Amino acid sequence: MAKPPYIELGSGERIPILFEDRSVIAIDKPAGWMLVPVTWQDTLRNLQAAIASSLAEGRFWARSRNLKFLRYVHRLDADTSGVLLLAKSQGALESLGRLFESRQVHKTYLAVVRGVPVQNQWECHLALAPTTGPAEPVLVDEKGGKECETHFRVLAKRLDPAHGEITLVEAKPITGRTHQIRVHLAAAGYPVLADPMYGRPATKQPPAPPPPVPRSPQRPPPARRPARAPDAAPLALRSIMLAYRNPFDRRMVTIHAPVDEFLRRYGFASYVEKQPDSPKTNASPPPAPPV
Image (cartoon, rainbow, N blue to C red):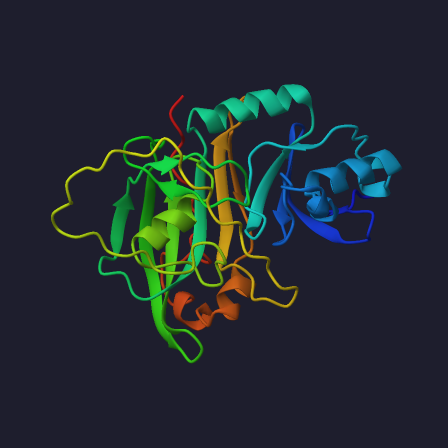
């Protein structure tokens, strides 16, 4: 009997499998599932716990693969959908984790943002301060923050009746900091649609910075992430591609997530289909990461 092309959770929800080999399974993570719950109230939407429970129950999708172990290699925000890589063994987890840590994994996202960027392509290098948890906003901190780099490219623009001018943007994060794409876009003044944490455009900096002010030893705690209503619009951010060189056989692996539904939801399907380098039609793999 063929192996099911999905992971089935205890609730009966099925998560599509995008790619599988001897060491990994890549899934199309739905929005709303978190990997690192903040409080005990969030545990019902803990994807890792739900997968572990399904494995322990011996559901057919796992039994047919003789799976005893499956754990996420990297993280996606709870509200972000798309490609999520899961390791089938502790050895695979460690080997693939090193690829992410050494920036040998290519990642591509699609985001729909408010407004129209001035440039068609740009890079953001704003350093980000560590967060105390997934529910805390990340802060731009050029002095004490961690190095960050994201490349952006405008794909399409349109006037939306509900949101005004919106833009479809391709984002390629070089580093992998928490909320990196969302913060970099918000800092530029183009927040991701339906972002409850960074949804307000950042205030533009004055041409000449004011004199430095001594930093207080006690920084006030950031505001908690607003609760998302069950019927709220999904965050307009999707991971659509992941590529890396397999650490075991050295072959290039390129994993794509479907984009059609995402593009239709925000009214970009008809425009992007006409573009020769659109995310839907461009199937060529990226250059191999450095060895």
